[in-house]
Amino acid sequence: MDHPKFVIEASEAETMAEKLGLKSVLHLLPTIVRSSQKLSRVPISNFAVAAAGLCADGRIFVGVNLEFPGLPLHHSVHAEQFLITNLSLYPQTRLKNVVVSAYPCGHCRQFLQEIRGAPNIQILVLQNDGDNDKLDQINGCPDDDRDASFKPLSYFLPHRFGPDDLLDKDVPLILEAQENSLVLDADEINENGNLCNGFSALEERELVSAALEAANRSHAPYSGCPSGVALIDDQGQIYKGSYMESAAYNPSMGPAQAAVIAYVAAGRGGGYEKIVGSVLVEKQGAVVKQEDTVRRLYPYKYYCKQNIFYKHFIGLNVSGNYCYIKDSGNYMIRSSI
Image 1: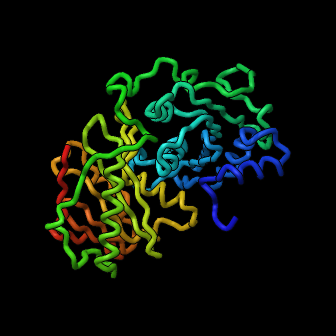
Image 2: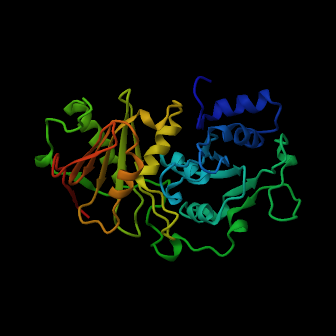
């Protein structure tokens, strides 16, 4: 493969399992996890974690952990969070089985609760014993239980707190269709373009539209503050991420990290310096704001400019000095909610 794959189509997964002489695609997951650990970006801990999920349609999705030097540790992305965010790029996908290279922390077990039917998702943890990748050689259970089998999420988090405690039964959850009815005020859109890295007005509008779409797909039923981020790389490719809340609040996935996940999952293998523009869309007056995180996550030592919609344009030049231009490109958000 020319690029690492974070999504493996069902037909390809079946072919891979057959070539390796495995009983089924399910038996392929440990091999995928082991090979995916090298895709982690962990310059702080040097502890690579990977997760692979098998969906009802036969596709395999991959997640790895990401760390960001210079930022607080809570901005890091766990492999299971990456996996679920990767899945969210393909709405209506149903997750059945997950294999992980290390025991999920409480943070990730809680984040998984935002999926409908979460207690029945089957999880298996690899042993740290080198090359034993066959399913029947894996210890999937805590402590000294040697029954090598998948266990439901309810086994790892038996007394759960989740959406059922706070939401009506018909509220869409993560991996389900969302529509937050946010629109941009057309009268406020600047046709001249404000992304000063040489982007045209058309490219800027495409980036804003992508961020708006991400905000409208945001899962934010607890705060009522949907938001979305869109990134553009030096090749003009756009990546978007939606804010996804957890009933427990802290495990929530910010749109800035979600957009980075989309960038990494695209499999182009580039560093973050290839991200040359970003747009955040959120509701004016939101009680949960993402602007500070976007400012922190994207101002690397490169010429990376950011439009924070609704209010500000931010540029970061190569010397690392901020240049704030207030009320430039004032994209206002209104909601029909």
